[in-house]
Image 1 (cartoon, rainbow, N blue to C red):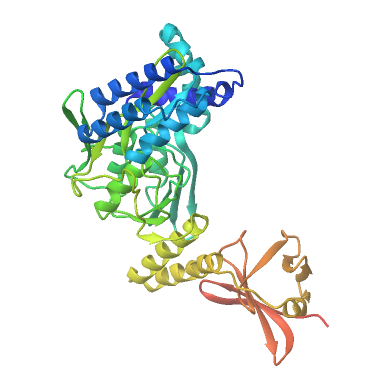
Image 2 (spheres, rainbow, N blue to C red):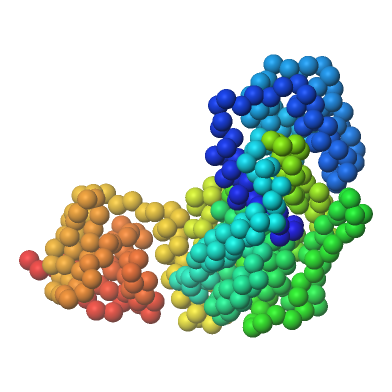
Length: 438
C-alpha cells in the first residue's frame, strides 16, 4: 500500500461525487472500446491472480462484442455497469471503474496536483490526530483506543508511541476499529508490535504480480517505551472495518493474540492504485494481495469473522464485560478481585439494562438527611447537599449506580413495602445510612 495511493483516495472520491453527476455528458462506442481495452491491459499486466484476470478480460471483451453496452449513453452508468460486470465474475472490493474527468485531467499536471494533494492530506491527517481519535482508561483499568485509520504520515508514529504509552499500564485493552477504513500496512506493523513479544514475528506478506516479488511484514524487535504483550486485547469490528484495519484484526486473531468482537468486516485484502483509462475514465486497480503466514490466505471477499459476533452497536459493551469478567476470574488477590467484580456489575448493566417499575421508582422520592431523590421524565435523580445532581441507574430494583462516580452506589432500604432510608456503598461494602424524612 504505497503512499501516493492513499493520498489520492480522498480527492478521487470527492471529485467523483462532484464531477460524476454531469447531466449532459455522453459516451459513444469508440470511447467504450478504448476504456475496455485500457482496463483489460492494466488487468493483464498487474492483477495478482492471472487466471481471474483472464476471466475478467474475456468477459469484458465478449460483452463489448455482443453489444451489451450499446444502449448505455451515460458515462457514469457505463462505469457502474462495467464495475458490476467485473464483480459478477469475481468480487474484488478494490476493483472499481469510475467516470471522473476532473481527476483524469490532473494527470497532465500531476506533480503540481500531487504536491497540493499531499499538503491537503497531511493537514487533514493532523486535524484527525492521525487516526488516534479517542483514548481513555475505562473503569476496571481497561484501556480504550478508537482508531479511525492507519496513517501513512511520519508524524503519526509520535502519536502512536504516546498513545501506547498512555495505555501501557492497563490490565486489558480495547481497540475500536468499527469506523476504520484502512491505510498504512507499516502502521499496522508498528501497532501490532506493541501487543506482541520478542522474538519478532511474521505478521503478513504482500505479493506483487508485476514485479514478481513478495514484501514481508514482521514485528519490531525494538519499540520506544513499554510493550503490552501480556495484556488481553479486544478488537471491535463492523462491516465498515476495511483493508488495513482488517489486516490488523486478521493478524492478531490468527496469532491468538486478540479477541475480535462485533460484525464481519468488509472483505478488502488487496493493495490498489488509481490509474487513468482515457481522458475521462479512471480505475482503482488491485496490484498486490495479502498472504497470512499462518492461514496461507487472506480476508478478501469474506472479511474477518469475529470471535464474538454481536451487532456493532453493542460491541464495546460486550468487550467491556468480557474483559472485566476475565480479569475477575484470573485474579488471586481478594481485594482486586472484588474491585473487578464491582466494575463488572457496571458493565453488565450497560449491556443488559435493568428496568424498574415506574411506581416503584416514584416511591423512592424523598429527602434522606443530606440526600434528596427526585423523579423526573421516567428516571430517578440523586443529589447530596452541595454536590452535583446525578441520574440513578438501576443495577437491581433497589440498588443504583452513577455514571459520574463509579466508586459509589446507593441502596434503598425497606421494611416490608415501606421505604425507610438509603445506604451508601463502596467496593468495601456499606458506608453511611440515612433514614427517610417523614
